Image (cartoon, rainbow, N blue to C red):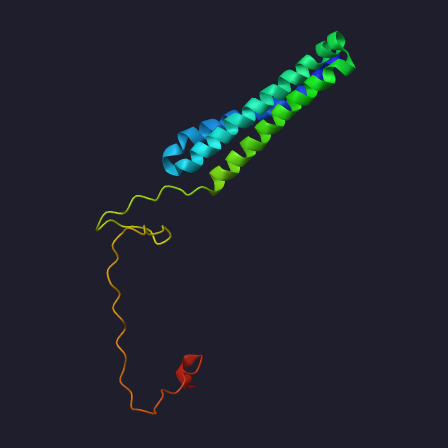
Length: 156
């Protein structure tokens, strides 16, 4: 029963190790597309990974520490280790959030004559041809065009 309890106590740390390592690898692969955001996110995953490892070590070492130092002797050690884990979690979470909100690298400008889909944003550095204003019809002073009917042009 003790081994099953220790497995369930360490299972969240194992899952978090897999998720954080996978996230760090994914961000390292996508660093070229996302630039600074991916680097910040990767650093956040690594810092959170270190916090999870410290927590896992604490979970495994607790029974032997309690037997050797006693409950009252282990409390200052737990306080220090939990503060270190808290710092890892706060710094890692701040880095991940910073990676999400960081400015992305601008997309490469399209070549002249190359098709660019409408949904793809234009680069602000790309030269745009000047827009010509639509020609205005000359009207006599005081005359306004009558409003058009909404459907079918008014013929019945």
